[in-house]
Image 1 (tube, rainbow, N blue to C red):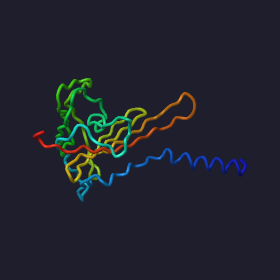
Image 2: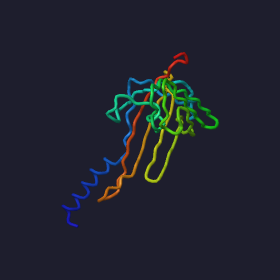
Image 3: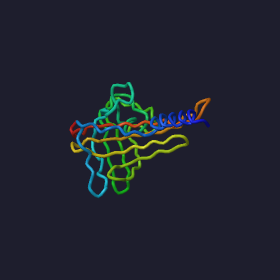
Image 4: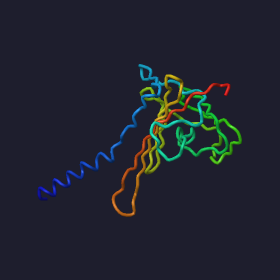
Length: 183
């Protein structure tokens, strides 16, 4: 291979690599800090949170993010969901979520109450889902004001009709504010 062609190949490889790397979404300065115990243990995420949250970076053109698909990667409920009641057993890692609201319909087989299994890693409660060609990771922690912070990442293989298989990656950061039990 001649020197100019080799230089072109190296240059193109240098341009493609950063596009496929996994960039972290910066944590907003105006959000309360995440509580991380010094020993790497996880805090319970038990609490009642607003159903509609805010994103650190808008991942879609939709005006709001919701607890079902943003925090737990599942289909949203129809109706007027208001809050998500979360109970978290730190010892077993089991988390149970009850979506509260009016006129809730259940297009999802799990309905308004569902459970997930989390594990503790570095102060975050984590959920992995893997299937052929797809990987989802949700990380959950509590902020200083009691909000639930959710870091969500997904990767999916993209197999075009022609050309090389590529991995599509996305990462999002969400905040769901805590609400009082009276609401």
